[in-house]
Amino acid sequence: VLHSVLDSTGVMNCEKTDGFKYPLYSAVFSVVFVVGLIMNIVAMYIFTCTLKIRNETTTYMMNLVVSDLLFVLTLPLRVFYFLRQDWPFGGLLCKLSVSLFYTNMYGSMLFLTCISVDRFLAIVYPFRSRELRTKRNAKLMCVAVWVLVLSGSVPTGFLLDSTTPQSTNNTATFCFENFSSKQWKSHLSKVVIFIETVGFLLPLILNVVCSAMVLQTLRRPHTVSRGGKLNRAKILRMIIVHLVIFCFCFIPYNVNLVFYSLVRTKTLPGCAAESVVRTIYPIALCIAVSNCCFDPVVYYFTSETIQNSIRRKSQVQNTCDMNYSQGLQSETSSTIKYLGVEKMSLLPHTWTVII
Image (cartoon, rainbow, N blue to C red):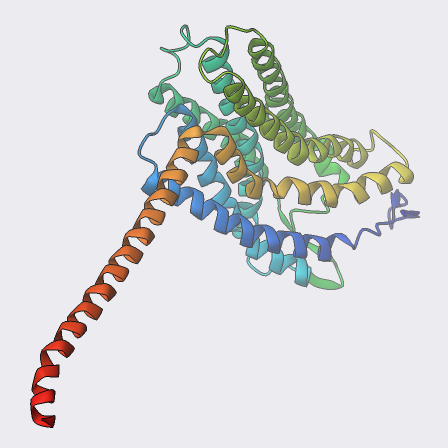
């Protein structure tokens, strides 16, 4: 609950009581660091070492892995900050960690959108999109995504004074939180408008529209000629997994961010509204951060190439284990036979001695 109080200048502010966010952030970010690091390292290994066939989709996925890994590696600094509620690493690392956070979030949304559009073109326009769906064009699209997200995240992280003292009587330092209403009105509100429009609304619309058109195409009896219900089930599973992860991870945070911006700029007045927004914000942020753990799930269900690669790897391992067992069994049998022959060769001599 927030209570209105007057500051030293006579301006009414709402008293903040959202201290629960620090232990919540510490716990969730720690889990995301461990799980996200392991899963994305495994994904990177599959992409670079075991995946023999690379296509447009895997190009987008590899860039998504890079984005996730860069973000995951900054999480220990954030966990340390949330535990101590003090940022001792200096302004540069604070700016870098914040920039990578927004780069990962909106980069993930855009790369997932590229995957969705690529699937839409492959299924709805399989022949007309052949010249468009090339690895070269996929690489160019990835470059465009990186330029776009960096043009929004780097200014946000580096142009603002991201480290501020908590109070005149406290030497602890904030890292990219508790900006003043003046900073929100002058800069941050404009950033929110840009990232919400380009980084969230457009990708959301594209994902929903592309998925709907793919589903509509699949209803036609002549669409999937080979595989029948099996292929339809696979594609339907891809779409469901893709949309659920996209909506679950990104909609709560981005919708709440709009209201958070309205509250901080005093466009949406009242302590009751600010209380609700401040309570939802940490939970929505934790859900958004977890996207780097869910992205590898998208890799598996979206790409049949990756599934086949994992199956081949498993089959090779099973074959090796089987060959090893057979070889060990054969070697054991040969040893037993050899010992039997040696024993038989020694028996006559022993009988001679006894006789």
